[in-house]
Amino acid sequence: MASPALGPAGPSLPASLPAPLGPLWAQRNGWVAFWSALQVFPVGATAGGPDVVTVNAVLHQAFGELAVGHFAFGQDLFGVLLTWHEDHVCGFDTETAEHEPIAGDLDGWASAVLAGPEELVGSAFAFGWQERHGALEPGERLVPLLPFVLGGEYDDANLEPRDALQALRERAALARVIATLPDGAEVEWPLPGTREE
Image 1 (cartoon, helix red, strand yellow):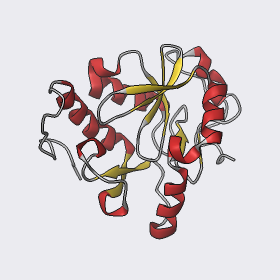
Image 2: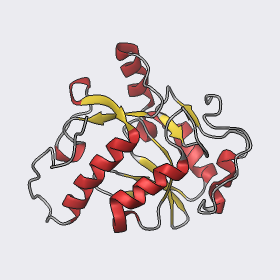
Image 3: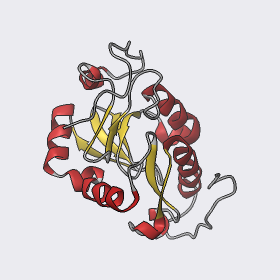
């Protein structure tokens, strides 16, 4: 069901890679599936989007203590990261840095995605978007102009393809602000230094 490998064959897995994730790269070095809604990052340099080491460097630099213990291995259509955290596969919301367990291992995660690809990775939306606007470029995710956490809608008028790493940095700024505020506080968007072109 997945694309050809995004990275070179036979990569040396990084020492920081949690051992339970190793099987993801055993047969295919990074890939996309479900009309590119799901992306597993490749190991090593590639023209097919960000590699797993770079993503994790940006994640930990940009989010700081909000990302401690998370290792990102993929992402959904909207840039929610898939991470390994405390022996679980989690969805890491890049707008808030909140995370939610999906499964206790890769098999459980794969079963959950296969059972509900629209809910977990946005597959139907990805298909519809690309029918209307064309394919996403390697390394792009659909990012809201007004973040979802601030009331932005999941519709074409509020979404645009953006470089995944730039979007990750922008959303980290929002997550860091949200982490300091009480529930219900207002946030002015865009924040200084975000929405860079």
